[in-house]
Structures are given as C-alpha cells and as structure tokens.
Image 1 (cartoon, rainbow, N blue to C red):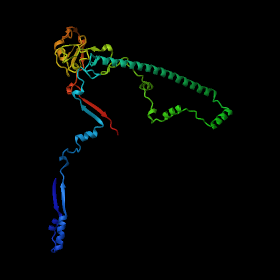
Image 2: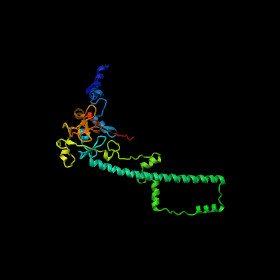
Image 3: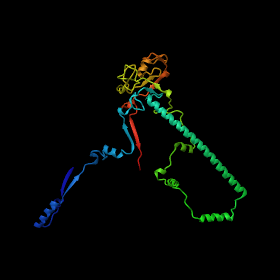
Image 4: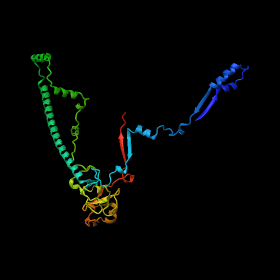
Length: 351
C-alpha cells in the first residue's frame, strides 16, 4: 500500500502571486487552512496480484457452497473395496464358500437363504398376477355386457321412438323433488368420501401398484421363473453353485475352511493353492471338479496346455477340461489399475 500526502493549500499559495502583501490575520488563516487541507490517498494493488487471483472464494468455501447439489465424486480407498474371499452379501470372510457362474463368492448359508426368500417372493408375485388377470378378465366381461346393453337400448330407442312419460309420472317426480331430503350417510361413508376429495391428505393418497399400472397400460409384467443373482442379475439356481476351497495365510496347510470357528484364520488374506502367493487384486481361477483356487498366471504357466486337453490338477492329480475352469471376480484395491475406484452421486438442483 502506497501512501501519498498532498498539500493543496500550500501549492496554491506558491502559485498565486498576490498584488499586495498579506496581512498578519491572512497569514494565520493560511496556516490553519494548510494544516486542515492535507489529503491522504491510498492506492491499491491490482486484483490479479492478490492471493487467489480473480476467484475470491477458496476451495473449502466453494466446496461448502456447491456441496449440496450437482455430481459429487469421492475416491474409494482399499478399505472401501471388497477383498478377495469375502462374501458379497455378508461383506465378511466367506464361510463354506461357493461361487456362482458369474465368478462371485458367497457364503453358502447366505446365498441359500437369499434364494429361498426370493423363491417365496416370486411365488407370491405369481399368485397376485393370476388374481389380477382373473379380475381383469371379469372386468372386461362386465364392460362388454354393459356396452352390449347400451347398444341394445340405443337401437330400440331409434327403432320404436322415444318413450313418453305420463303426466302422473311427471307429477310424482316433481313432488319428490319438493320433499325434504334426509341424510342417511353413515360416519364411515362420510369419512371415505372426505378422503377421496381431500387429495392433500397423506392418508387419502392412492396406493401405487406397479403390476396394475403395467396392465392398465397394456404391458403385461414379466415375472422371472427363477430368482436373480444379487450381483450379476442373471437367473440363479441352487445347483449352479460351485463349492470352492479358499486357503488362508494361517491355514495354508489345510484345505478345510468350512468351519465358522476359525474366525482368526478367516480374517487373513487368501493365498494361491499352488504357489502360496497372497491373492490381492490378481486374476484368479477355480477348477470346478476339484474346488482348487489358484492364480491365473500359475494356471497359464504350469497347468494349461496348448490344445486345452489333458490338463491335470496340480493338487489332486485329477484331469479336467477347459470348460471346467471358472474365472473368479478378482479383488480390488485403491489403485486405479484394479478397477473402478471412484464413486459418484448426483443430487438435482432444487430451482
């Protein structure tokens, strides 16, 4: 900040050339004016030279203002990723692990209970669907009868002419209209009618049924025959589950990890059954016949043959074919090379 002081009265006194010599009173007045007419000018630097440049808000302030709407992204660390060998439903080390045709690993108890629950839900949906079809067919029959009767009445009215009411019938209707009307509506009926017309009340909102809405629009809902896999979305059956053997770091000398008592061992990372290397984010394959899990690099180097025939399991010695090989879903880490490491969430702007 540069400060400049300018004495306007003094400069004016020097430039002026009075014709007569000023008196003593005038000299005193000039001195007082000189002392009071000192102006201080503060010159500011350019805005682009200030910290932050042309953006007056800092990153934290801008994040607070724009953090409630728009697309928000966050980087996922290794703690947010599911490690290899954990159940996709329980998010914990798999107990009695099984693999689906898509390569996802589950605990047997978790995936079996999931399939049983989904089968019950599908059975209930089929019953509701059949009832809805029956109700829709009955409604269409009633509509056809009503339209047929209306067409018959219209034909008779055109063929035989309009029916003329007698004067006695006109008099009866007139007298009935003059009579006092008595409200016979019950309290329950009144509350029901009030809910129908009071659309702003929460209890008066109609219940949405997706199946009825689809049938009303002419789109019959397709109910799957089998429950879908929770991860891949493909139809899944109990006999499609493939049992596998996961060897842990502290359980490398044993193939039995079906017991849920080994909690300390289940917390350790899985290892390759052949090379004993730790499995983190590498590609992994499993042999369906022998349930052996190994790294894909080890399989390509040791087990795989040129024509894909005559392959032998290095752990059990049993022969298998290439179709008996199942590629498992690899684990992920916080590095971008392991897969998707960012999560995004979109919040619409309320304008």
